[in-house]
Length: 606
Image 1 (cartoon, rainbow, N blue to C red):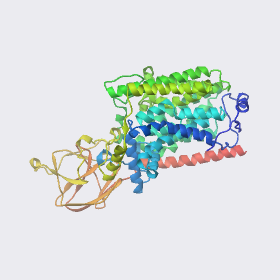
Image 2: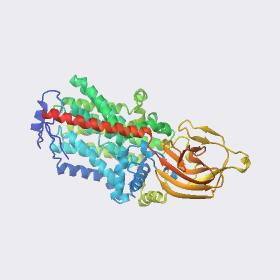
Image 3: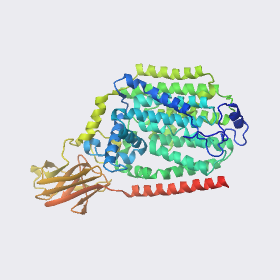
Image 4: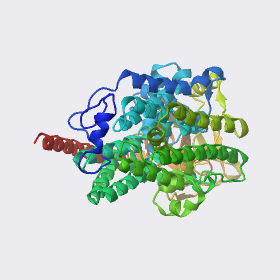
């Protein structure tokens, strides 16, 4: 792991390095790295960050198990689902086969792969009860490391280490760990310090900035979408501030190029996620309760549980915002002489605080995609960087620094006792998740990824894999159920009274997440009802010929018309055009990135 040098030199003392910053030519807030970075992220900072990350989890050992936050089951089931599909040779899962108790959902098309890939790896190599704890530790370690690399541009090793530790255990991270279990957002937090690192370590915008920032923005999309939106807006804010300070509009063009490169690199995920939203109930992402208007600081709704958590996170937010601005005031004459850095951190903190209160409603309504952040207090993820840097810059005495953090812990203790204590999952709860996966019983899915036309309340959890649908006795004179065209996937939707009954014989040959094969022998033409939600990416063949799948009206299951006799049925989850196009765009973006880096190195050599 490499530590970036200040003017190519890192010294344990502050004087020489800071003198070079103060007297450097060009923009006064740039910390330059000349030549290759010095690979000297020493063991002491790394051990300090690792120890602090471990300390966050000490309460786990004195409690029933692991914190069971809002999103814990979503993530843990995703890890188990991905791991089971890897064992079947499916490298990049798209369809969560056991969601909605085996009827499935296209979860992995829409949820970024970063967190579920890391979670599945951890689950594969460690005992299951340890998986979430180790994941949290790794995410906090990564966050502290990235903050150390940023802080080391301006601070000596000891102070940079404190900034890294403070960021790794900042108040909002404690909320994520103990109340939210937002594992993808926690992972994305490790990317946030890299944003100012990439922007501020160069004197002028160049190819390296485009390449580095583009890779960072792509990584943000692949880690967590709300965090990616916040990182993009943060990048725009910092770039505007830099352009103003340097009187250089060219910085904005470089930023725009980096945004395009990042989108291209992540296109294999982004394009399908954008295009296929029309095939699921994605509007549930901003339904009542999870809309920005319901989640400003201290906002109340008719839901008492929502109000309790909102008060909890609001008080934690007020504490962190207050401490950040106190540190900013204390550091206004920072001896490092980097007024540009101080101004940008203050601007970033002020913007983050502003969008958490209801007076920012016009911004949330007007700015593209900002509403998909859902929770205004999520901006605490970005506020953690100014909070950590300004605290170290402004508070010189170690006792006061520790007092600042203890103040945050006291607030955490207060909200823990008065508003909402964390829930806990014990060993039996974790084992139940495994059992539901191994037995095939499945688990509850997510509303926003439910295919259009599907209705969870109408499904039969205990239904077999394949059944037959026949007209009811009172409708026996009806030879064919009326049909109409589904406006989303253009498959047929069957209406009318029906009755389930056995076919002559069904033999299932394969029931994989992305491929189902079975043989059905029927005495007359029938519709076969499959234990599977319909989705446009499913391709159905009967006896080797493509068949237009029907959609069961009440539940949204796949129905397949078959003739009398033996019918060999195949249902395969195919690569739609958007997935193919996204993969090609990402490949071209990688080629462009490599060309950019090669030219950049050639320019340095010249």
